[in-house]
Image (cartoon, rainbow, N blue to C red; front, side, top):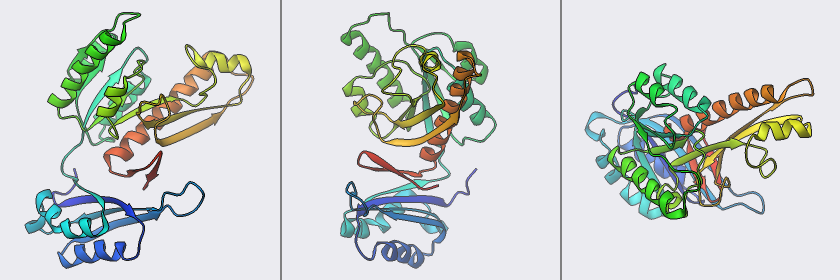
Length: 294
């Protein structure tokens, strides 16, 4: 558990002089203790956004130790630099809603990390379009919501199912939705509602080897590297801002089943890192890219 008076401040704004001084000076004057501070200016290259990003982990004195008071403290600085500034109390555990279909490797991995204390979150619900993992959820003491979709469901049926998921997200006050191999294409409306707070995982062969059994397709082509990508969900399928990626070398001696097993391990690791960095407030969006403060 984080100490009760610790916070993380994240911000982004147009890069200009004096930002670090303004933020650190304000914290110092208020009697806060800075534990860790990182910053980045996206100024180099043709695709540079010209934005400045900062993450500060600090401890506040007892009389300032609530988010509303700290928001007031930073009101002028936020306005002065037109900052997207956010304050996160580390004593509050983020709430995750997990979604899964019929491949459970990422779900199992996240649940193990949660149960073993490696992932400091609360998981109020697991949602699936199949009943496959109902017993697993019950064994973990997590409510399981089976919201089926018949094969060939039309857009109206899919949207109705999504609205049930949205209602659940709101009622459970979920901070983050994790698509732990949830094999349904989300509507633009659902993606817009989840902007910046839904993470997906997929193999990194895309746009090659689309559809079913991608590792078998890769094996048939004799690929030498397999990998996975975790990214934020957007209406552009599998093209949201990337949070984490990893790869592993494979060779001709491996069967298609061995490639699949290796790929599932990578997917689990990459998704877990992305989720952890998000809930630790280490990920800041930078247009179509992301800034990760490790």
